[in-house]
Image (tube, rainbow, N blue to C red; front, side, top):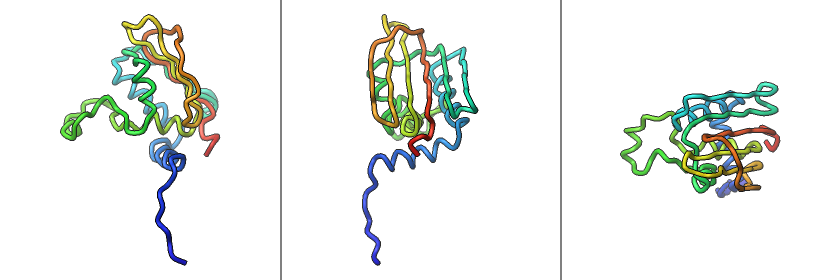
Length: 155
């Protein structure tokens, strides 16, 4: 029987990418802490329930993210670190690939609350297994809080 070459659908692509980045809950914690450090945080709080399988929350006091950038941050290959190929040789930050948040969101439920220093209100974004569910204004601290639940429930 001859093999047929075909394109994978986005759901499968996202799960494969997630598997390359997220081996276990600790991988998520690592990725999110790196984002917090890159955001200039001097305080990062980590909350984990049942080894991260029930929930992981990372709360930081970094620069926060604008609403537009927060929405875009969950898209594959979206990054603030690279604009041209030469940037690949000058990277001085922890995370840069633009894969982590999209991969995490593909295999979990994600809630992000974020606020920049200059903004009067923050933004709340809910994504369920890669599908955006809610984007709204929220009162929150300056910085970012990301909560991950239902990890791998759609795998």
